[in-house]
Structures are given as structure tokens and as C-alpha cells.
Image (cartoon, rainbow, N blue to C red; front, top):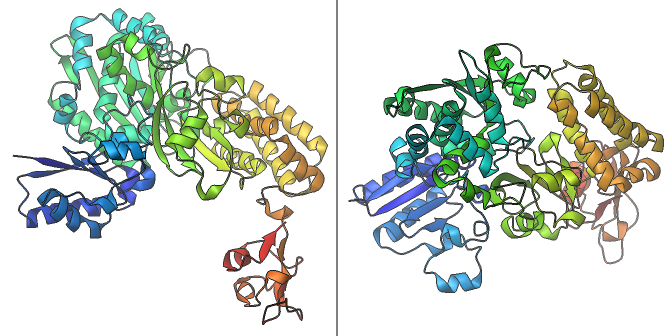
Length: 606
């Protein structure tokens, strides 16, 4: 009889940290201790706290171990699993002192990272084995599909989704139920459902984690959508860079077919629906729905003019409903628990929860799911654990290359569609990159624009040429050659690109530039007028200098300099035994090797 389960994260993050080796070691040690019939190892999806991986949780007590290494496994098995004694040194302890006094052992829900979260889309991630349909069914899996097919009409399903207030989690925030109703209203001999899993934003991994941790939820949701809209075929478009997600999706689809949950006459309802996986090659533009459908059809991924919209003429020219992974992940819970249950979370116009991939200059990097309306301050300071090394929070980039930045002055802004739009930002798919005082906002804008230039499909001139011209202006500014007139040109060009580009990629490409101009114009002016980068990031505007009175004369900086720009002087600082060094600014290539080498912090950049 199984008395304990050891859940080990098998998501991409923990896998890259060695969780596969950990699983093998646990299995070996459990066998050596004669516990094979009593302890079960479960490879799960992402727990969310990626910064602490590999993560191990032991049930039924729920003890949460973090940063577990192969060398720690023997102790966990012999002490915890065999003798019942928790290995305290490995327990994650980021909890309030009051909580520590009230509980015997710290569990996942006790941590400051999790206590403010509400997991709906991520409800099964880190909880079940994603490769077991039986475990999904044990968590009420496919009950929503059964309810929809046997108790509800297609119109009732769509109305439930409309009443829930669910909006698309892929960026634009269009009401999901309305989108479904548009497809349902069109008569055709064939209709399709498409899941957009082409997650291309730098730093975003929300959809990947759902596919890796709970693939059956997406299958179930797409089948429900097919029933509601009259579609009998679905495609999941996922980038090939997600091998774990792809493998688990394929396993889940085969299991669903074997159980009669995909295919002909599902639940004896007369409804037929089947799913197929299509791999993308990693083109960012294929995140746009019409480009994605063009790619599924076997053509180069380029957007199509709209109208006609996909609900009228989509995949293979037939009416099609497209939603992203996170949007679909909410559907089974809405059908099971009702529209009002979902609508009770969030704000008036932004219902439910939102998943964010929290990254950048933050202690607790990982996946976060919070009710809409949660403030940025709560996410950064409480869930995220604040900024490392005592640095000050400067801004958070939402929505990746298509989004904008929220400055520190607006940290108390509730995160929802309308509030972010009001300050010139957007929700996007959910990437949340945190920046501190050491980040240059002009350089950040240039980083995202560089990405957009590379990813433009080139079909329309405003995007293909306009973004390139924007990048050239930013290059000029960060090189110290910009003028105040260039800032006016930059802004004018941004609006031209937004108003004239064919698809969402081009229309939103200028957003990082516009947002940084709006909130951090003084940094642009410093680059242009003072020829200085206040954050000390832009190389062309930096000067490295050795403070002679702080130099101990060890010469390590000179040894590390690749340009032979550092030489010894005849000056010896008071209290020092060796002559100080100096940097020749004309020879310096501004690589920073000297500064990172100096143990005495005698080198500064100005």
C-alpha cells in the first residue's frame, strides 16, 4: 500500500537543473531501502517556483524541499521516507514566523510565494502526473466535457463562457464567448478549433508549463469548443523548441482516443472530434492567428488581411475558432463550476485570474497566477520576494515586444486589461520582466525592437522598413550621436508603424519605445544632450576609470585587459605599497573585464 508520494518537478526548468537525475536517484535509493511498495515517485509539471529548482514535495504531509541535489536524496529517503523525520536544511523557509509556529512542517501553500495566488489555469500543474489520464480524471478531468455533451446545448455552453467574462489570454483580451459565437453562427461543411501554443515572447513560458503539466485540460477544452461551435477537428500549433510539451501532448491525445474522449461519438452524444499537433519553427509572427493558420496549411507563416476574420474564413478557408493555451485551460473549470464562480474573481471588466512568467531582476522567478486586479506591487514585493542585492525597482515590462513598461511610480496599478491600456501598456500573453536601477530603458527598448526587426515576416512595408528605421534611430541615440530632433522622429515613426502595419506584430512593435519615451524621457534626453547613460549600460557612452587612491597596485586589471589599455603609474596612494594603475580611454574597448576583476572596487564607470 502506498503511504507516501514524492512529487518531483518534470517541467523544462527543473529538468534543466537535473531533476531527471534526481528521479533516478530516488528510485534507486527507495529500492535499496525496501520502500518500493510504500513510496511512489511522481514526475509532475511545473510547481511555479523555478528559482528553487529542482523542487521535491513529499505527501501526504506536503513538505516542500527546494534546490535538491543528487547528494541530498539518500538523506531524504533514509530520514523522511524511512524514519519520518523531515530534513529541515532542505525545507523552503520563506514563510511568516507566525505560520512556522502554527504548522509542523512548511508546505507549498504556507509560502509567501503561493499564499496570494489563485490557481485555475495552473490548478493541476505540479499536482498530477501529466502523462496519466487516470490522474487527470481523478481531478474531475473530462467531467466538464461530459456535462457539456450530455446536459447542455451548444448555445448554453457559449452563453456560459460569455457570462463568465473570460477574455482571451493571448494578448488582445477579446471576449472568448463572443469569439465562439461568431464561429457558431457561420454555416459550413467543416469547422476547426485551433490552439495557439506558439509562445514567442522573450521570457514567457506560461503556455509551455500548462502543456507540460496539464495537457489533458487543453484537449478537453478544445473538444468543448468544438461542440459549442460545430467544429469536428482541432489543431494545436506548438513550437518545436518545446520538446517536453510536444511529447506529453501526443501522449495525452493518444490516451484520450483510447478512452473514447476523442474520436467518434464521444460520451454517446453523436459528437465527433479529433485533435492533431502541428509543430512551428519558432517564428514570432506565427503567434498572430492568421499567420499561424497559414503555417498549419503548410505555407510560409505570414498574416492575412482582416476581414474576413477566422470565424468566417480561417484554417483551410473554413470557419475557425482560435484561442491560446491559457484561455483554453480555464474552460473546463468554467463549465464545471459555472459562470458566476469564474466571474466572482478579478475586476468588473477583467474576470478570473492571469498567469505571469515572472523573470528578470527578481528573487522568485517562476510562474505566478493571481486574480485580475492584483497590483504590481503585490506581485513584485510579496510573491516575487523583491529585487535582489538591495537594488531599487525601476520598471516591469509586460507583454514582451508587443507591450510596454510600468514604472515604479505606478506600482500600485491593478493589473487588468483596462488599467494597463490606460497607462499605455498591455497585458500581452503574460511575460513580466522586472528591471532595477541598473537597467537602461533606452537599451531595453532597443532590445525588444531588435527582436521585432528580426522576427518581422516582411510582408508589409510599415513593419519591415519602419521597425528597421526605428532601430537605427535607437542605435544612433545609444551611441551618443542622437539629437533632440531624433526623439521627435522616433515618436512620429512609432505612430506611423502602429497605424499602418498589417498585423498585430507590426501594430504593437513600437509599444516598448512609446512606453519608455512616456515614462523615462529623461533617460533619452541624457543620452542625447549629456551624452551619458545614467544606468551605465550603453558602452559608447561609458568611461572606465581607476580611482588611484583606492588602487592597491595588484595589476590584476591589467592582466585581464584584452586591449592593453591599462598601465602602471608612478603614483603610490597613501597607505598602499605598490603604484596605482590608469586606464587609457582611447584604447579601452569598454568590455568591463577590469571592473569585474578588481577585488578592491577601485574601478568605476562614468
